[in-house]
Image (cartoon, rainbow, N blue to C red; front, side, top):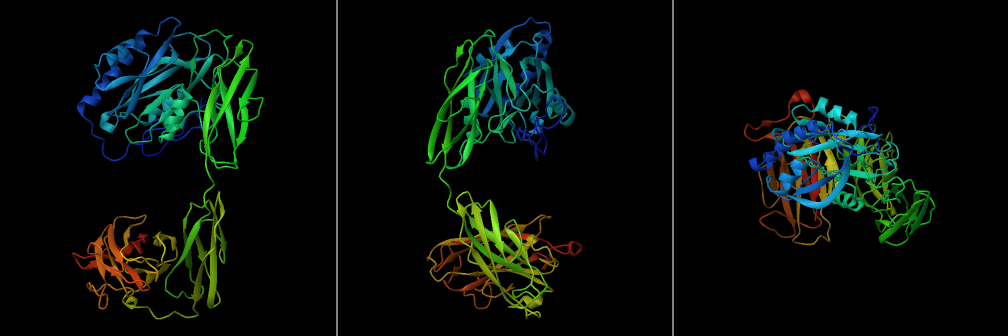
Length: 553
């Protein structure tokens, strides 16, 4: 279902969103996408569709082919069963379109068949950044599009052709029909592909398309294509896998989606006598699973699904750093521990504080050294602990460097780990105050390789754009004029709403300042407008949170 800035869910027949479907459709954001006028000529389909659909209401029962076309310049697919549209597309009347060789069966509009439902068709207006068509067999979805997107998705027909409808829970199609899969391109230009070929659907998903419909999330079904063969015909199957790229040692479910009401199933590659089969693998690689379904008329042709089993990932490698309202936080105040990990942890185990995520708030009522650690866990297992120590103070310590010039300052001890640091994670005020500073301490390893390049970027976090000054210095809160030696000022300075400072290690590269191995440096940030030499954050906001992206060599 087309959507605006928020994705919608596939609707079932009683109007409830169906959890088995994915994000449904168009996200129209920002200014309309401008297209060459020649591409918008496909709008002529609308008039043709409405004219032909109206003429077909009284049509006799008939099954026809819906032909698929592709436009390479748009990277769009289009399917139609209307003869005049097919004729004009084949003749090149609409430039850039060619047959893909795929098609599926549909009933002519107005066909009287038990269980047949009409399919609505919409045209996405170029003025909304679209130039595409959308089909649905769900009356609720059709009505929802009309209500929510007037002028964006233009109704062309309430019955452009007819199909059968799948079971909303299982995605199973009625007897003598096969699944029609729907895939959304997950782009702002909004295009869908409709196909009965499971391998084609899987290839689109592999390209980043989103599968939509009812039933299993891996291969949901949007509609059902009627078969032109008798009721007694042998089954036709399209197996699917619950995961296309699972880890070895885990289990997946294979499902055989078959027409012809099979009474038995035979699987190759796994063991089962039903339409569902559980599979696992102990070695990485592509494994093909095949099913043959049988009924009283005979056995189906073998149908296969390929699963790419993946090696378990390496356990996460994590770093841990601390953010507080001082470089030596006072007992009773907040210190936020943040972990940055390589290896995409799915969970974390903390020691010294309590959290289920990548950040952990810490407090202490006792002065002295307190150790904290975190372990990142993924499918490959737990990684080694990353540790940090906080030296809690009974009374505030003198401000380091030039930080005494600010009413408050936020201090993050990074060490030497590439990560994104977010001041908003430190929830206690003043945090990164409107008139304060934020300092991140970096210590270059003594073993750092000379000549490598890194960068530090900063921008607004969860707020309006705010101009900032960022410096790289040997002194905290140092906003003096640049001094390339680093003795009497920062080695680098930059200003802007989004600002970046680049550096190299050991020796200067491309004119970037060179950081000495074994030396400690400070990234200093303040809310500052250089043109007026004034604070850029509105005092009424109290704090202007930002993030730092540290790309360290």
